[in-house]
Length: 311
Image 1 (spheres, rainbow, N blue to C red):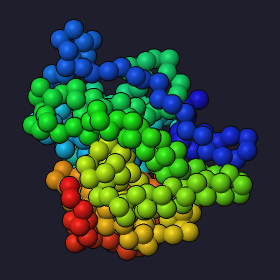
Image 2: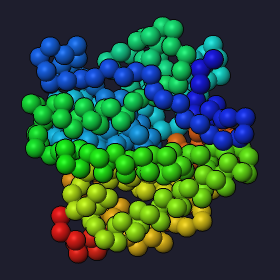
Image 3: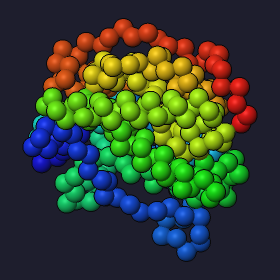
């Protein structure tokens, strides 16, 4: 049976995210099975999905827009096949059906699920992407054709610090909000919320001393954290019950989010309309009537105080 994120609940009522199964690597080495060549690859994203959005952010930051094309699915999940009830990412029927979403002109697929089944006829897992590998490939694998080849978000001297920071961010924040939102029992929710806010408090403290998470240099860890923070007050605080404290109540995290948003190439990876449409209308078990809260319409292009640190 086809699976979605809503199916990954343990007997204890906790949300457990499985690992992605597609792990092939694109490399600029000439003998690579998948060489880095301009015009060879296409990126499928959802603006709503934080994991996919960080891939799009990398595409922009590295200046790969002319080398790698991309298209976005519709924000609201739909039936991926007539033969079962699976709900997932689907493409619009025309370029004008949903602003920001495009039909699949490469393979003619109607859903991301169909792309998986074209690749592997016996595939039975979730229809997702190994985005952690994709951002690493974008970081260095396409430097021979990137507009900004010297930008390195995973520098050798900071790898150990970035890896340690990533562990905290993924387990307690990126995935932590989902563990709060998809929990079906009180105890796993309480534990996930506790870990989430301990991690946010830790990041707030780090950012009181440095412009970015690993010092005064922008790194992969910052992009990983940003995609969750930009969705926090508009979605996770309400939809996923992460309401103990809002992002805008953290002075350093809030200004840091504005700082990252204003980096050229980042803001175009954020489509708040798609984000809100997806979360509030794709999870009927959480929000059965699909009512979308008004929100605060936060202006992340407003001034911030992060220039007080050198960068």
